[in-house]
Length: 91
Length: 444
Image (tube, rainbow over the protein chains, first blue to last red):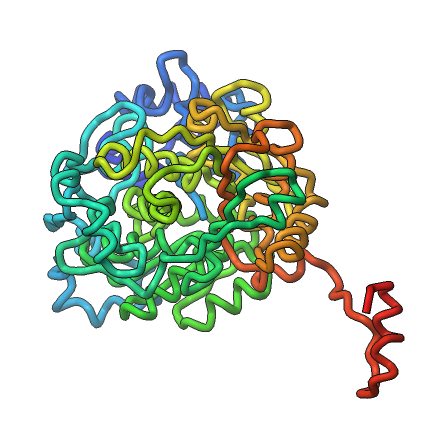
């Protein structure tokens, strides 16, 4: 599936400054692999040594946090909007 | 600093900011000096960063923390120097990220802490203190963090203060912005209590209700922070913002004659306040102001949003986000960014993280009001209910000197108490008074 991915400022050095990039994948995990192929280094920024999403990385598929869905196994509908957003504190 | 827009400033209207030219995004690139601050460091991987409006490690996405030169602080700070400082939180400026050109101080801090003997007796505690931040300028502890955040933001050159808020933060940002001549743009969940909305709008600035939960609003602000030249107090200037919470710990220790209590009860939303209480207590010791702290720190969450308490009970380190459904809206953060660290602090201190039933929140508010004459908001109700629960389970023993933090005023959340219970209305006649009181069965 081809999807659009919003990239946070912290990762834009890897996307030539682009705030949004295209990627493909049937689920979030395969999308990250695809993004890492086209933007080398992006994978290790998002995933820890065990291949899981880093603790302070939030990934949303169509406004829903993938931790409420199937995590990296969350399927991506065609045209889905994916957002990568660092965790922020609240108040 | 403050150079970025001197000739562009008139173009920086809010409605013009949605199509930003790139020059405004260079805010924060000017060198800023903060007294005794060495820089920022990542709490996860330790990578160091210069002082800048940045909150996340570029490598691992870990949160950034302010790093100080404690040796320099220890050589300049003393109990006497603090006592001769202002009566606000800025008496502890040596332990805060303090801009050389001054701070935005509208009187946050220096709030009341007093013994609570009647509540202590009801709960079976020997010594209980209530520290209440209802007396802050906008009646919650958020004035402390915002005072720091906007002081630093102004030194970076920001002219617009923004935030995602569950209400109290909105009040504090709008007030501090108004008092310092900054513009404010505040994003709130659309279902907030009326008192919190009114208490923001009154200060001017823009208030934007968002159809979603706090976590949705927070996510929106995280996205906006990458493209707007605004100081989002709990996003891009968060490392500085969060430091303001430490002043609650400092005030507790100073009130106790420069020592720490045996136990504290602290509400948990994002977990930031909780972790900063622990950090503040450690700092006081490291700069020679107090003996080594041995304080158990207990966290308080309401059942309808208790992801940190759940992780604590399960003995795991990962905090699974939840969809909040709690009466305590100021604690309704389902994805608490500092939850992981709050767990660590609770466990290492020997404390607990309590999850209290939703129905106990209003009971906690009433109990504190009835016994001590303190009207707290729902978050305070959660704190009192958690205190009660911790005492009942002996997580807090009767002889432990305990401090409960009351972080906001009850007038903002009167909806939580339901219908107001009075006697029936009487005519202004003496003989009708007894009859009216008799309706409630009270002694006359």
